[in-house]
Figure 1: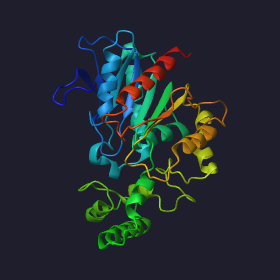
Figure 2: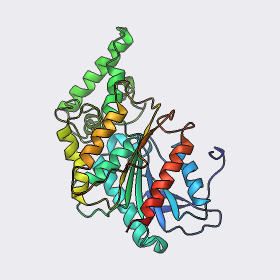
Figure 3: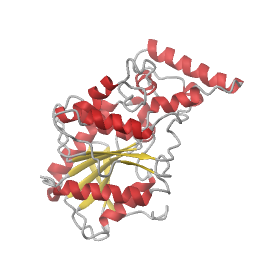
Length: 329
């Protein structure tokens, strides 16, 4: 279903802010599409690194019936920049891109905009919607795909109980990093060898602030900013995040959630249907119901980034969600 890796898809590279770009997938004839699906990847992602994005873009742009184009957004945190950035920076840049689309692309000035995040990009989506809005533009819809907990994925590696010296080394590295992050200044760069031992990308600078946010050592009692999806978070915490979305009024339409049924980063103890049920309850407890019941699901057999199995179902679900979003007033 996806293009050959060596085939460059047609598109336009937009500079939406100084040194920040977004790639818009277009038709071979560059037919204008008024509506926008704005895609944000996860840790270490950048342009064309999530396999299903190109498949989704091809499906939308090659169909004359659809009115949507896909923007693959680059942020300061893209690729290896995640370790020195925060969710606040991400959502500020996402808002900049939306304003660019609205004001600099005339054919999209009144079109719909849906924000879609993959993995840690899902944290960006929820952070955008529930935190203090200031002057962030409204979204017509939002999608979170593979919203797994970075903290729980890290703990799986740290807490394995095989008793080997190598495992003890991993646990020791984690404890050292937590201590450094707890006591050091926010912008202190943690030792890369210790970060690599606990499974974070090699040769990537990570500040004490971002490691603390991702690892969230005081959870579930005091979760950090990045700890939005852990299965042990309290109902009270979910009301403070999912439950605030309707109140902030940054989402005109619905929130759609797609898990990957065979997600390699999802801990074995997580009850996905139960967790989604708790999120739905929290999201719908506000001023209006925002959870999308029709398309939210766990895609059977899909890997974390839906590299093969499940792409057809993902494209179908997202396409139907966009079609319904387009009709809303």
